[in-house]
Length: 151
Image 1: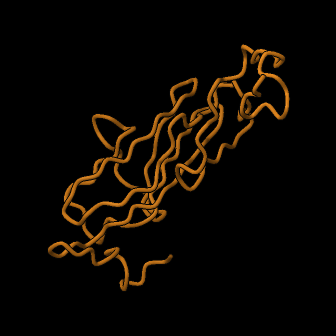
Image 2: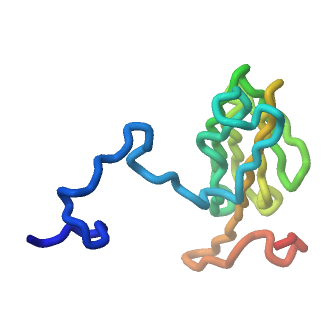
């Protein structure tokens, strides 16, 4: 009998079925630059904010639009704040979980973060937006190169 892949020498029929409490797929890692959860209610099920979909690093051509989107859970409903390079941005309307950047230019490149907070705690995530300057068919590189942007 041929052994199944990944069973470490066991016959495929002798493996125990997966636990019903364990999700069948592994979570994706490395989507953005990280998620931070703080506060007394930071434990599971406590109602503290949790990013179900954190920000992801993105690159966009100069002049293009880009949407930065998060999905947050928490009870009570968390309020969101958006930041670029640590500076508070106006709250997006009508959808606070989506930040649209129109006609991106060098000034839009940087580290974007979203902070969610409620009475049970606080969570944040961040990602890098790179704006590429394209001339003709040749990519020149990030628009922030040479403008003293920290790397």
